[in-house]
Image (cartoon, rainbow, N blue to C red; front, side):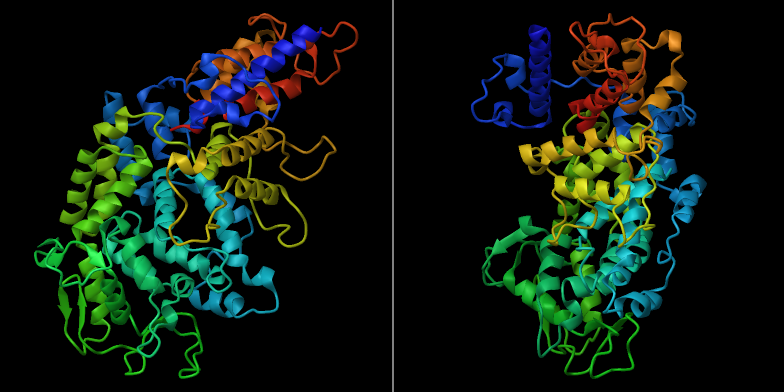
Length: 596
């Protein structure tokens, strides 16, 4: 008996170490507790090659929040004689989200009872931002956006739209729970980010600058000629447009060694920025503020944008940015010229193109593709559908379609992808907001522990998008723990056994497979197909072996929850429902589910 359990422990340890290696933990042995002997197998220490799924599975996995069997079936109903043709149809349809009927997702949002998602900016200001004695009410808007974002990510048919909304929220990252920005976050998500994800970058750039959330987050609202604040201007250049890769260092802006070239607007500009450009940009944006009851304008107090052109607010003198002279006394035109300059700059085009390719293709995307996407970005900098054209070019590229497993799913993506793949029932709401712990609170807490709760990154650079940030034993272990917990958690908190699971593993298994056919092989076939879209090794065989225990792969299992122990335990009949949930957890934690 001891040898049976020892072999099971060994097999499980080998599997866990192999999973760690595949996800990106360089030394799986580092996961051992001190004093534990290593498992001496070459496969455990190496990073195994991942099985490659069919093309449509790969593409849907990378362009959505995770593979979903319903989307896969719908894919084959799209126009086209080949998978490549159907993929082009899919991309075209997704890039026009307004034409996609999303009534089921809309119904979930309606059922959530959210009350702030439709409020105007002035209503958000007066009914939430102005509240100082009730933190729960004050931060209700960002709490509801967090819920709505997860509902859309799981259930929306406009998957590419949600993925790109996520991308641009990361790019123009704000801490959603900022005391001043959080109450206005509905406006930031609904009116600033979402309308522009397939639009024009220059338009999006200015909309972000004018938003109340960003105004507070990076202090632009308080930047005046008498007290200039460079926080926003620095991040505008370093994170939103040119990127730190185009920083030349602490140099005189007139240094002849600094490169100069023709940019997207057809005129000459310096190609690298220096600190002086940040300071001059700060001057150009003085007077961009909000109506917040400032002592000079106490009647202006509704949270909307305003430009103050008076001498004590806006710096009226000449500015020099990237070798461009801004004439004096131009008022708000200084800011407009600055955004035009940055949006048409090749440094911005390359920086954004690389980030987009990194999100969809790999941590180090092919330079040739980045260059072609950057050129398209710059050539279309004034086009109203610039970002639609750029996104389309990436998704139809051979590099996108041929690569697989080059990205690690970040914790939120792993969470949502697993809920999508398992056809879970999870509609987070604020029904118990501020009063009691709910399933929504537990899931938010677990994804926060893994490092990626939505809108919770405190720095303006957004959540990292490289494997090295998420493949540490800490983040990976907490992601695994979260995914394992998903197979056990109920839709409502409680332990009476009558509350439905978030993932109805037993119900779906029984409904899909007749009792006479419920073998370990058939069960794992069903769940691998549902979650992953194919049956990759080694997880496929490992999952079958774990589920069947001492049964044969084709022996019918009785899915019960009874003790089959004693002096001669019969493991194949021992707590099979719990073992079934653990089997699904193994699949969810596999590198095939956590890579994309």
